[in-house]
Amino acid sequence: MAESIIATRSYSFALRIIKLYKHLTQEQREFILAKQVLRSGTSIGANVEEALGGQSKADFRHKLSMALKEARETSYWLRLLKDSDYIKPDAFNSIHGESEELIKILKSIILTSQQKENNS
Image (cartoon, rainbow, N blue to C red; front, side):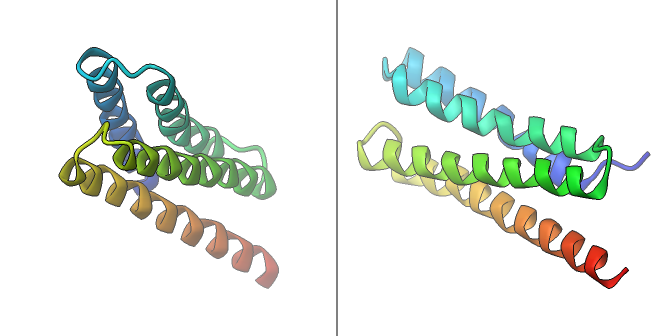
């Protein structure tokens, strides 16, 4: 079975978030914001995995919508971490850019899925 792009990208993103969490807790001694970004950032991929195993097209879209919510929340926490000087702008630009890409991909998949269902 071929791996989906969104599953691969969201998994890789989760690994980056885990590394960021380790940096924030070990180097910056920041625990509250770190836990928030860890939770939302790793939840994206978990919801994508659930969507891929969805019981129906509606379930698939619902789980992807949850992944989209988590991606948007992750973007918020990343912006907050940058603006409070816990992460440097160059590190932020890299990881936040990836979160924005995930948001775009998820929106596109959800929209395409809705259009396909409306046309059938």
